[in-house]
Image (cartoon, rainbow, N blue to C red):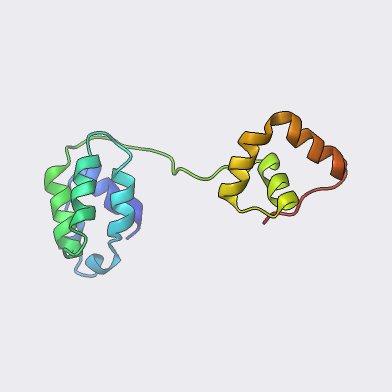
Length: 129
């Protein structure tokens, strides 16, 4: 069993796969399922309820979703941090963390970043931190 199997059974097929296989309860990832369902306006409250009651058994959480969430095709991409060359340049130059580099990027603007880029030249690539 994979994550997509659990999500497909909750969202689309409504087939209880944990009852069919006793080993599936151990494989059920509640945090990831909660996160996946939190991207949609019609399931965010269900996800929040399961986050509040995280101590509940995995089978009970799965049964809650199977019986509460309406059948619908749901798909969303994972949100990922975007790493830009400007952000990497500021992190390298000032030895900043991601958060501080984002703040510095908003303060410096394009002119300030261009001055830093000119200091290193076009041939120098900043290492990924």
